[in-house]
Amino acid sequence: TTRTNTTTMPGTIHNGDSLSPTTVTLFDTDPGIDDAFALALALASPEVNLRYVTTVAGNTGIRAVTRNAAHLLSLMQADTDVVLARGAGVPVAGPVRNARDFHGSDGLGGHQRSLLDAGLKAHRVRADAVRLIIEAAARHGPALNIIAVGPLSNVALALRLAPDVMRSIGRLVIMGGAVRVAGNVTAAAEFNFFADPVAAAEVIAAGLTTTVVPLDVTQQVRCTPKAIQKAFGHRSDLYARAMRDFADQAFKRQPHGFALHDPLAVAAAILPEVVRTERVPLQVVTGTGIAAGMSLEDARTFDAAVSEGTLTDVAFGVDTNAVLELFEARVLRFGSRRRSRHHSNASRVVVVGGANMDLVVKSTVLPRAGETISGGDLAQVPGGKGANQAVAAARAGAAVALIGRVGEDAFARDLYAAL
Ligand code: RIB
Ligand code: CA
Image 1 (cartoon, protein in one colour):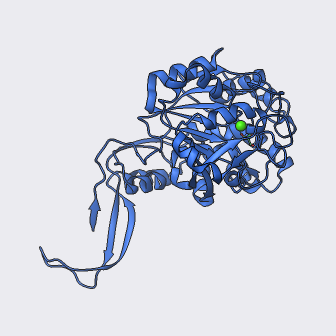
Image 2 (tube, protein in one colour; image 1 turned 60 degrees about the vertical axis):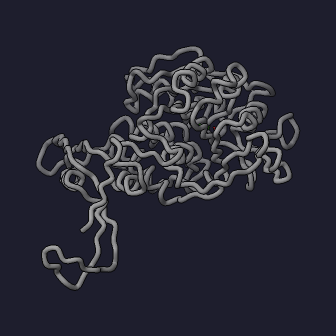
Image 3 (cartoon, helix red, strand yellow; image 1 turned 90 degrees about the horizontal axis):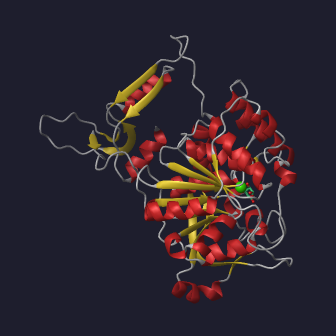
């Protein structure tokens, strides 16, 4: 077999804009049931170096979403040095909106109280999210990626106060908008853009390197009752009970499966290839009329947008299976350890070794020493002295850590997904 050694750089995957441990992520959120699942995906993903979480009023009020974030970070075992800050309690303009009909007045489907009473040590909260966003942009510049999954009030305010600093960041990934589909709040508008249309309009027009993940794709990716039951039905730990409770609330409104709006934005930041994007001139309708918050794709403004540098990458296609595989492996299995057949609790195994992709061909002859032969049926199979042993130990029920190196190419990405 011919082994493709992908160890050109220590363990990070640089797929153009994808995240990697050498980049830093700031998560701006209004938890929020799907926000909670998105936060779990971010925290469970080695590609996401989550250092900052900022809250914004949206699904419900700023006090509730901030309290939720402080406890969700603890529930999901986030590093205590992840900085959490409270943000805007009202939109930069226009009336205050909410999505309590879906997320509940506490933002977590009525389960906030049980989360607060679970004995978790809530994350410390700073009072100044907008200043934190600007500080992070100034500190990390192009190494900073922002994933915004609530109304864009904080991001808009940071742009107003420090436009040049904000324009130095890497990528802004936004869950928001409904471009070639109807809205989910009005016929025209998706909730995050509807809740603060002026902020959305300013952020989209700011010319940051932006990917918008709209309802066009998020409504295609759903977490079903069957998936929740399979993942959490047999578990009694707090994480499983809490996530199951949040999901049950969502199933009341979407009984066949709730849309993974915010988790898809995180998935697209981690693995950009899970969405198909088009670079289009996008605008957001402001005001309070029937079209307020509408995300408008107007091809007639294409040339102007090119010259102004405001074309926006908008996701119009999604590899639903790839996203659900990532979601299941990282969110639904988060915190679960299959009991080892040989130990009262799973032994910890640390494997130090290589992970590489084996390229295998079939041949009808065995080569003599030094002979070159031809073969067919080329197959690409994850392998490596280390990765194979780690997978075997995990299948035997051990809690395994693999320390190795992969490079920056497609083989590395496939290896990560396989591992
Ligand atoms: O329209 C979906 C968005 O609105 C999601 O971010 C959800 O959490 C709500 O904020
Ligand atoms: Ca949200």
